[in-house]
Amino acid sequence: MAALDIVRIPVLSDNYVWLVHDPESFETMVVDPSVADPVLAEADRRGWPITAIWNTHWHPDHTGGNADIKAKTGCEIIAPVAERERIPTADRLVKDGDRIRLGSHVADVWDVPAHTAGHIAYHFADDAAIFVGDTLFAMGCGRLFEGTAEQMFANMQRLATLDDATRVYCAHEYTLSNARFAVTVDPDNRALADRLAAVEAARAAGEPTVPTSIGAERATNPFLRAPTAAELGRIRALKDAA
Ligand SMILES: [Zn+2]
Image 1 (cartoon, rainbow, N blue to C red):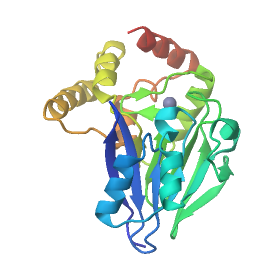
Image 2: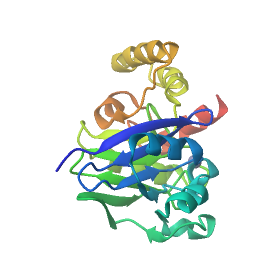
Image 3: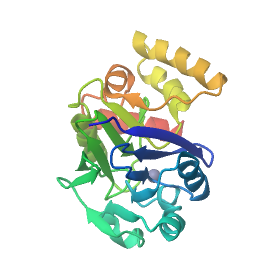
């Protein structure tokens, strides 16, 4: 099985849309297209036909390109069943335990509610890759708009079961802000201090800092490392107020 080609497309102020291509079947899917034009242009430039959109949650900066990309390509839109009313462009509704294919690559759907009530993630176990939308960020986690700290804690615990090498494809470049906050709640963490310095250098050079990895998050992410839901909730509230 040939490795997936995964391309980062920066859009809006800090969103990343992921274009995922299977070189054997030539199937190509888009995770969370905020907008259509830059995604269509990148796929065109590579000669990849977009066959599917996979949404993690309903927020407009994750679904805003759905209708135009579908109109231009005829692709199938896969979205969380719990958000079907808020993603009217969806063709196929999925939930925890469902499996989706891109060519011969298989992704397991995870329910990861908290940022939104029906948020899902897509885990390609054989590819050691997970698309997490706005659930886990580099040194951060999503805001609790429609769920609880208990739910987000459960999500973090589940993500922490993945191998360190698993690449984590999140939907925003929030890393520098997250790192600067993280050092205030975990000041003695040497790996975190080192990562903050590396991220400052990368951002100063205009470089992206994602995907991240489960290993890097296990070492430096205060939300993934929180020992209890109460502690996760406490630091999430601090970050919201920062
Ligand atoms: Zn969101």
